[in-house]
Each structure stands twice: as structure tokens, then as C-alpha cells.
Image 1 (cartoon, rainbow, N blue to C red):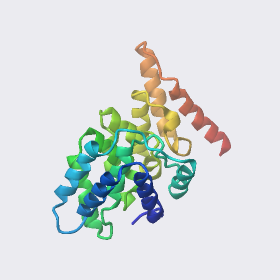
Image 2 (image 1 turned 90 degrees about the horizontal axis):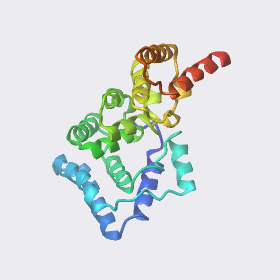
Image 3 (image 1 turned 135 degrees about the vertical axis):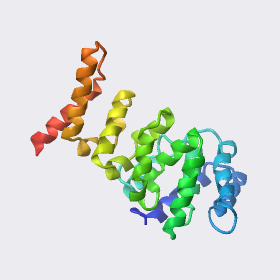
Image 4 (image 1 turned 180 degrees about the horizontal axis):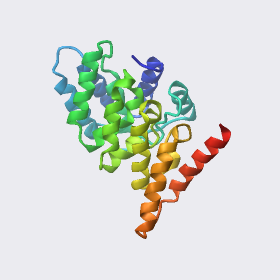
Length: 236
């Protein structure tokens, strides 16, 4: 179901929220969390998920070093240090969806993806590492790689351990190529050293040759990835 200690992370997120919002907002969030399950139409939960943008202050999450270490200990390489408080609240709401029924859980998460606006989509993709049944979301992650929405693409590519853990080689290589095409900061791609591969390097070199032939600049980070592969070959 979950590939990490759900209770630790769920309780930590709630603690962060409790210390960051006023009592009225906390009560509102807890009431809306109840809509994730039960007899009410799930559409009410989706509306609440959206309304978070109006209910929660626009500020960065306040994260202690201890909390950051706990999160990284529960899900290796996972960090919320660059998240907004709104994103933390939305992800906590997602975590309240009952995961005991796989079909129902997957249906609800997929409905959130279908109805999401740009910022909500970015939250959902950033939340991939915390979703139950992680293998199921590989195709959804691949959809995110094809997005032309900057916020969404950032959420998929940067500071996200899910792609390196679950994407197949073809989808992973597409993610790296998209990162190069869109000038993302490759230092924030989790698992790059582990997942760099010969087919990826060949595609990057072909791309560099095309850019050079057209008289266009080449993202210098491309060669950093090639160097990673060469170093990996030496180590092996």
C-alpha cells in the first residue's frame, strides 16, 4: 500500500500545519479532510482541495532541521523545504483519503488529477512520493513529463524522488531530456547519478550535435550528465 511509514509523515505534516495556521483554519482543514471518505460526494472534497488557496496564508512552510531530517528518513531524498504552506495543507488533505480500498483510492486520486488547475497539478505531482500504490502512478508521472506548464514540470523533475525510483528507462530519459530542453537545474534532479545510462547519453550527444550544427548554444549541464555516465563506467 505505502512504501514508507505513513503515520510518521502524516502526523508530522499535521504538526507543521497546526503550528502554522490559526485555529479556525485548522478546524476548517480537519472538517474538509472528513470529506475524503464517507457518504458525501467526493466532489465536495475536490472543491475543498481547491479552496485551500483562499483559506491558507501565502507563505513558505516553516520547517525545522529536525522535521527535514525526519521526512528524509521516512522517504529518502524527499524534501518539502521549498514547498508553500498551501502545498503542505493540500498534500495533508490527500493523505486523509482512505487507501484500504485500492480501486476507490486510485479512482479518487485520478479524479483530483483530472479536475486540477495548474497549481493543484503541481501539488499532485510533487505528492507522488507519498501516494499509496506507488507503482500505479508511473504512467501519470510520464504524463507530467510531457507538460508544458512550468510549475507542473518543475514538480515532476526537481526535488522529486519518485521518477528515479519508478519510471522505466525510456520515461526517465525523456524526463532528463525535457530538463535539458527547458533549462532546469539538474542538481535538483533526484537519482540522476544512479539512473544515468548509455541510451540517455547517446540521445544527449545527438541533441548536442543538432544544436551545434544549427549554430545554437548547448546547455553546459548536458555535458555534466555525460561526465556522470563516464565516471559511472569507470567505477563499474
